Structure formats: C-alpha cells, structure tokens
Amino acid sequence: MDRSDKLLLRKGKDPVGVSGLDTDREQRRLSGEGVAWALIAEFIATMLFLYITVLTVIGYKSQIDGNADPCGGVGILGIAWAFGGMIFVLVYCTAGISGGHINPAVTFGLFLARKVSLIRAVMYMVAQCLGAICGVGLVKAFQKSYYTKYEGGANVLADGYSTGTGLGAEIIGTFVLVYTVFSATDPKRSARDSHVPVLAPLPIGFAVFMVHLATIPITGTGINPARSLGAAVIYNNKKAWDDQWIFWVGPFIGAAIAAFYHQFILRAGAVKALGSFRSNPTV
Image (cartoon, rainbow, N blue to C red; front, side, top):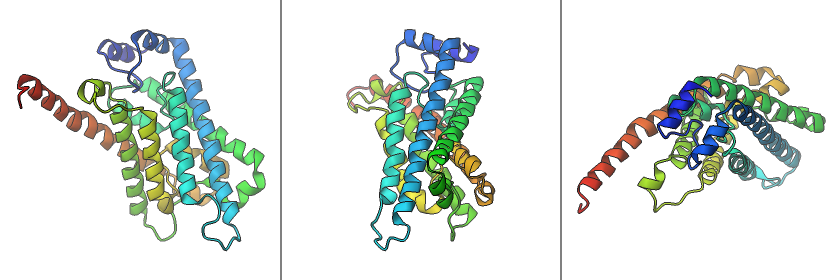
C-alpha cells in the first residue's frame, strides 16, 4: 500500500475516487493484490470500451456508405449512446475494484485532487492505454476490411475547424466529464445533499453521452486520451498522429480545471455554507 493511500484512508478520503465503500474493503483494495486486480479491471474495462465503441463508429460509417437516406444507420445519436452507455455499464461494474476510471484524464483529475497517489495514477494510465490498444486491435482483427476502409474510428480534427476550436472542444468536454465524476462520487454528498439520491455511474454516463452529441462533428470526441491513443496506434495514420496532441493536452487541461473548480471553489463554498446553516438553523 502506498503511504499516500494510507494517509488518505486515515483521513476518510477514498484514494481512488469512488465513495460509499466500507473501510475493510478499502484496506483489501489497497493491498498489493488489490492494486493488481484494480489494474486488470482498468485494462479489461478500457479494452471493452474501445471494442464496442469503435465497432459502433465503423458500423455507422458502413451503414451510411452509398446510402442516400440521411437517417440511415445509428447516427451520431447512436454513437453517443454507445459511448455513454458503455461508460455507465463499465463504471458500474468496476467502481468497487478500481474506482472505474477508464480514462487517463479522470485519473489525472483525481490525482490533482489527491484522491489517488502518483504511482497508482501512472499505473492506471498505462493499463488504460494498453487496454485501449488491445480493444481497437480486436476490432481490426475481426473487421479488418471495414476497419481500414472506414478509418479505424480514429480521432482527428474535422475539416473546417481550427486547432483552437478542437482544443477548446476537448477542454470543455473533459471539464464536463471530470466535474461530473467529482460531483457524483463526492463522499460528502450524503451529508450535504441527502435529498438528492445519485447512482454515480448514471450521471457520468450521461455526461459522456451529452459531450459526444456536442463534439463528434468537431473532433470525433476524444475526452479520453486512451481512446484516442488506442485508435491512433492501430490505425497508424499520419493525420491521426498529427492531431494526437489535441486529445492529450485538451483532456488534461479540462481535468485540471475541473479538479480545481470542484475541490477549491465549490467544495470550499459548500463547507462554508453548511457551517453557516448549522450555526444558524433558523435561516
């Protein structure tokens, strides 16, 4: 167990960013064996995430290829549902094992908020990236002809949009996602907002869904560096590599802003407001 993880646990904080887990489970998860299972969970979850979503993107392009019907295929709405739905399912399945990050930007944001140690954060990011590469590799193995023909589901900046626009879309989109993660997994929600029941994976999945609706036409929607890297590695196209930095810099900036906003502005304000209410309950 990392010293920083032990310290966070003693302070009542969740080292991996998911609230509502008992202390005994935390102790088991923070053991050496627990870390190994967490890495496996992140690897498999990210692999499944890329496999399903990239297949959906390629399937949609094959459905509309040569089809005069503008409503043919699942459409952008269907692609957005695939990404958001898979995040909902996979976060729900892995939250109790690894925290259900499935995204280096989420891990980075939780690291900045001191909810996960540096060593664990780096290991998670490596597992996520490897899982993403394997997931896209499976897509290519099973659908090689379609994969090559329809550009491998790689993230690239769409024609007509400037680099600044693409970067801004990734920053704002990732901010929405990571801010939702912080809010949905805040261990103090039960005390502060007990009248607002929340199943953490649900709002997180909806955040991914909504961001995809807004930014698919601009960048194909990254907001997850592992997703963008996995597709770029397997597709190995110059355009995908030229734009790759957007899908790392943007999400990391967005995650950093979300961490700062939630931890040092919203939470500080909420603590102050709650203290004021308790000291003067008649207000």
